[in-house]
Image (cartoon, rainbow, N blue to C red; front, side, top):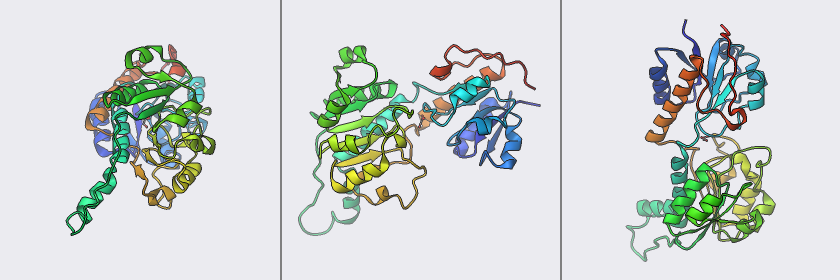
Length: 332
Ligand code: GLV
C-alpha cells in the first residue's frame, strides 16, 4: 500500500490534480473536507503527510495522526500550524518561501494602483455613465511617483515590494524588528520607527507573519496616527489588523482607504461591513494565485513530500525546525 498524503479538499481541482500526478508513483493523494469530521479522521489516522489549506493543524488533529511525518504548507504563512506540537511529535513542517514573493509584491502594487488611480470606480464609470451626455466625470487619481511607501516587515516579500515601488519612483521607508542594511544600501530604503512610518507614509503596506506579537499590530492607536490621505494595504494576514478599528477608520475618514487581500474571517461573510464600503479594494486572499506561482508551489511542496517519504529531510523546513532531522523510523 502506498503512503497516504491527505490534501485539503478546498484546493482548486487543478492543484489537486497536479499533486496526484506528481506523487502518483509513490503516494496516494486523498482530498478531504472537514478534517475534524469522523469520516476524515479515519483517513487521517493513516496519513503520512498533511497538506492543509485553511485547516488548523494542532494537537487536536495530530492526536489522530500517529503515522504523520510532515505537515506541508502550501504557502509561506504557517500561522495555522502548531509548529511546537509538530516538533514534539517529530513531524516536519515545510512551507514555500521565496518562490511566491514576487506574486505577492505584484498584487500589493496592483492594490496600490487600484486605489490611487480609482480603477474600480473608473471601470464602473465606463460601463454605466461615460456614454451619457453631459460633463465627463472621469475619476481623478493620484500619482504613486513621489509618494512615501511605508513597509512594515522588510523580509522576502517586503523587499520585493520595495524594489517595485522604487521602480515607480516612490520613497520607501520601512520598519522591522531587524535593520536590513543591505537593502538600505542597495535600494535606498530608510529605516524608521513604527510611529514615524505611520505618521508620514502615503501607503502603509503590511508584510509580517501573523504571530502573537503581530496580532493587531495595526489597531485604533496606529490607524489614528496615519494621515487622513493615506491608504493601508494588507496582503499578510487579516488578524495583523484590528478589523473593527479599521472599519471605523474607513467610515470616519481617519484614513483614505484600504486595499485588502486578507481578512479576519475567510471567506469574508456577506454581512462584513467592509463589503459595503466604497473606499476599499478587496481581493479573496489571492496574492499567490497566478498560474506560474501556483505551479512552482506545487513543485516545491511535492518535492519535499517525496523527500520525506523516502526518508530524507525536506529542503524547506520552517525556521523553528531549521537543521532538525527527525529520526523517522518506519511508523508503519
Ligand atoms: C498565503 O497566504 C501564504 O501563506 O503563502
